[in-house]
Length: 471
Image (cartoon, rainbow, N blue to C red; front, side, top):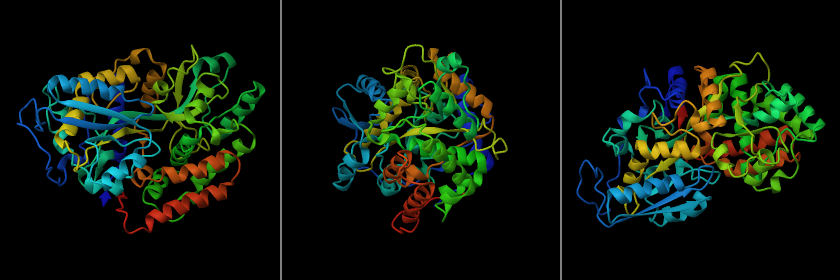
């Protein structure tokens, strides 16, 4: 399976991201490789009459079973859309269930031929798409359907947002949220102390020294989110070494974790760990509790995360915190990509299993979620944009974090990048063990590298795993 990404395609994330922030029409949008669509196994579930208002033929008085990852965005935005769907289709019932362990709870249902009708396949315990891709509907019919307002959904989306969920021409997942990854900090705390976000790892070390003087740490982490630091490391390494670093990791190359840029970042992190700049005990701390040590207690200065962090910690953030994002640091100022380069992509992948009891209902709920009213509700309540255009005002609904996303994306220019190998191959659970040990100071850079390469090599050598080649 091959996914070709030209330089323009790799940069198309900028186009939809800037449009999300500025709420402006997107000009020159690149076509997604999902346009052609893929084969789709016909559903045997009962359906009703097809119409413009019911494009998938949801059966009267049927029930829709949706399982949603209960993470940073919660599940209430899906419940909002579920209520809308029930009003559009009187007699239809939508059951929205939360889960924090998608793979653990749903893989047995796939095996039994009884999966939910709609799944938000997210979180540390997400199902590797490669293991279920043949059991998922092609969602081209969803983006080609009219939204609730009557406009074809494809025409309402930002360019490039379908690409992360497209494999070998099959639109297997529709990613709902636009995510910006960054180092997050309290602008008020930094201003009070005269600090600036670090642009290099040396500057991060210097900031950690200043933090110690204030009896604070530079970083904090929680056991379920230890791989947030892997995401930070990969971003930093790509910026330092260039796109070939990303391609080597994406294509599971031998010794991909031994690339010079990756090793330089790991070594810089290890220096900070050994200097005691990570708050101890993270491997035994629940991740939101650890995050609260940063956002509420201000025990640490920086935290790497996606832009869901503000909403996730809204009830555990100090008043006047002024949460703000900064791009990931590079190893040096002579990096291949500038400091302003940014990791950003569409996230929260939604899938519709072919063996669901109400496939039409799963697609219909997703259609409603992609309508302007539901997408605006998400942006306003989660302080993050969706893949639907025209839902975020310039003031970011008063959110400093959302405004900072605008600033970062504007500064990044064409230097926007992302990757998908971790999620596609379902590596995160195994990688978590290695990163908790590393952040605890109980393993070396060599140990971390060896462990990550073993996980990668195991997938690469497994002929039962369908591979994707990124060019």
